[in-house]
Amino acid sequence: MKTYVILSFNEDGMENVYVGTDEEKALSLKSADFENCDALFVEIWEDGEKVDDFRLEEFREDENSES
Image 1: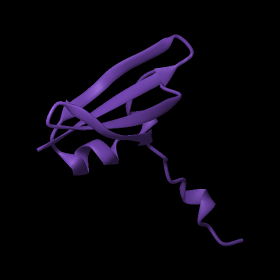
Image 2: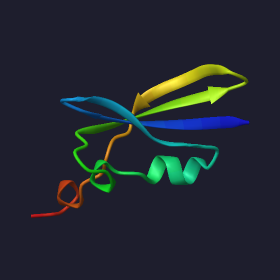
Image 3: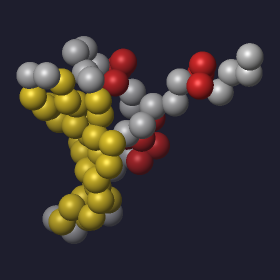
């Protein structure tokens, strides 16, 4: 079973803001969901080992708007 760890980063450091097995919930989080958050990172753990990590990119509606 995979465990998702979401880390919130800001100029003061980092904080675990979510730890759980719900992939959909983990990957739907946004930095705006947390106070004083500049970026979110995901660590994926399986059988006690980290198997992946990446920055959780956020989609902005204005990036897909047609002018």
